Length: 498
Image 1 (tube, rainbow, N blue to C red):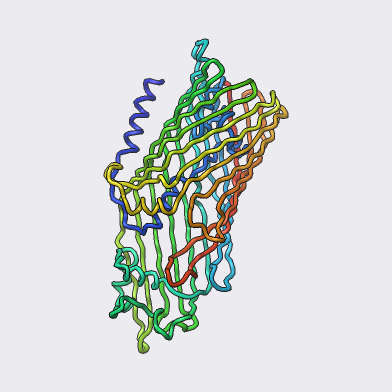
Image 2 (cartoon, rainbow, N blue to C red):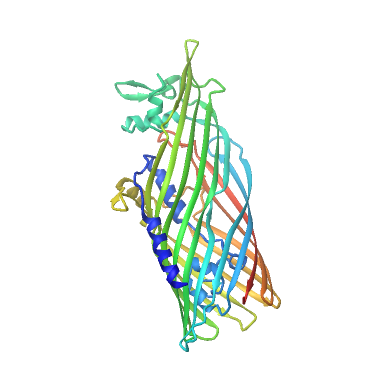
């Protein structure tokens, strides 16, 4: 088996690191969003893993630990296979902050299979090396499915952002360049570019706006690893991870001067489509020390993931106005950008501890640290660094600490589990209405009889953030506060000892 696996791993590594390289000229703040999208991950795993808050780094045994600390499969004395279907329910409240605007609520449900794993327990026939096991696991690291819907009244318009770009000599084919192609959408005098919103008769005017953001897809990882046990004191494990991403984001934004408060201006709209598909490769190495029969300490390190991402991006911009009773304006479509970029995520470090309460259960705790400013964009096989995007990431992101505590009570043949997870958000410039951390709660039950086992878990998480369809220096009214709540239900069924 090993002779077949090693060439396969080498082939997968080569396939995931060969790239085409051209970074699509999207705006820099979007690259910060990309950095978080690829780096801020959290394995969902099996129902047992999720039910303990994902805190089983030092306890091991479950296949999901191949994504956290692969030394965990070194405990396995019997082979095991399991599959976990799940359902995620997302609730999102969004409100346009500026003005007296009401919030809108969107609900979205998604069926998924967030985890499946196989651990093959090998017979070493060695006194010192009592186990040498092989594991294969698939899990979801991030779920992107959500909908943001908002509407309300506030000052300013998207043309303000375009005017600011043009006065800063920023002309791109996806927004400001489109406005230049619509006659008189923006105007130029000795002081620079201006729009209908800059006219004295328009100052202080409010318009109605509405928008919708639809996001679908997820980030998954296939982990192939080995783990062993040395003298029942030290366990080791090594994993190669093959993550993949499939992400689609559709944005629609419309504004209208329904009260005729802006001279000339009638309405405008800006739509965006972003599609991402890609794959990467990373390595994970871990150790678990069995200090006593009850106490275990663990440590693991995750290498950067080297991503190759294909990206499709296109936009449309419309601007309509009336001058001397004549309707003017139009709609412009951007070119369809099909390109690829490279992304290197930061290193991740994990430590943990577990304590066995005889045969009655366990308690466990683990922590991880990641410096998200270490995310790097590049091209030409990771050799040519994108300095502008990386400088923006360095200025916007910082280190983040994650902490998980959980446990299991064994009431044979049933088990009861609970856990809690905490994560510092790595964004440096957080708004007053945005959480600086995320908290998730989990609970579950299990049944184990002979070779069969079944587990169920529910995980709940909520946090507040913000979204902006565009930003300007003149107005801060196009900021949408969002309150997210996500409930994930998981059911794992499996067999051991075959």
